[in-house]
Length: 534
Ligand code: AMP
Image (cartoon, rainbow, N blue to C red; front, top):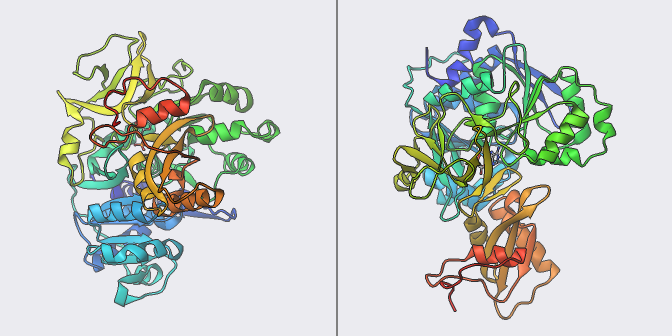
């Protein structure tokens, strides 16, 4: 059995006789439809592999995709893996600081993007000495600045590429994840991750060759790669990929017209649907839909109840994270769904609820959600940050950063994060990154950022801001602050609420006391403030 994920998702499927089968139907934001077979996927990813090989990109090099959902994203991702380079994916809404942190830390040699997004790269290019090749899917050659036309380089590349034997330990995919302190960390995976992604796609999502599967996640995040590319295509499953944004009516049309059988989405999107006029759903006829899955944030019981009533389906919540690479804890058809629970561990996964000192806690008690190390898709390191990686493991257990409890029947219940990371609409946001962006605004002297409960987004980003003495808060300044965070970090990190205040609480070593800010926001007792700087 070959280990190369790029090959398994393409040539291996063709060799199984699926070369004429649709690998994905591409549906643009304007509803134009184009089908790509497994044969097309194989040839186009081979071309991309040859194209970057001709540029000198090879084993171990890091190459990023920075694209919205579009066919070139998939050809590039698989082509990069075929040459045994590492594919990093970047969410297309990232701003310049977010890009600089990720491209700079990884020492990426190349990136594929489009003209409208390239502008952001051009502005930080002089700070990225390792970045030699920029491929533009809609651009012309500009050899002097290392800018290459995708059309040209693909036209010159052969559709045949011999994938070299790949070790299961060969690095494969890189996703950056946000922590509560410091810069984002590069979570590195290896080709052996397929050993978790394929069986979970098969046995949890229930995917088989007859399915039409739709995963709404963007390829910038782990769900978009593990379950929008690797898992389903390694099983020869037809996917639909949709380039448009959220639109309840369009989504229902898509589920119905494309005869989607398995749908993987996220709680915020499902909560948005729940707020829509019910006739959209009652008039939708979805006889083909077998199961709906969700990931990324807690799934409220009301959403499942709504789905049972209007869509006539359960929603199966699944839990995993960038570092785990594949679903670890899950609900699935054939097992009782306990409303509000993440479900039970997948076969071979051994979670535990541990106290900070590593002692196992009894059923019902909240503690650190840990997983016994060693599953196939376990991340192999945080790039350039081995000490942060090692700090996540104790006594052979990986500490996920989440807190949870287990009931006496073995169901796991998510309780929260053990750090200050904010989960807004399923995206992890580092308060540190937002605070850093805020401090770049001339008027701002100090800032502290927290996540506060939100009915739609699960958590919203709330920024406490202290201005330099000579400035006064006003609406224009609020707009300026929002725009700045959106341009520097990303639109999802933009504070939903900005609270101007006279001081930001810090402890004696200068650390922002977000806990105190949160209590202030929620009108709660801030607890022990003895370390507060006076
Ligand atoms: P990421 O690494 O960006 O995919 O985010 C992973 C984090 O999202 C987890 O550590 C959890 O905090 C949260 N998360 C993912 N799935 C769930 C879920 N089903 N229920 C609650 N939180 C979740």
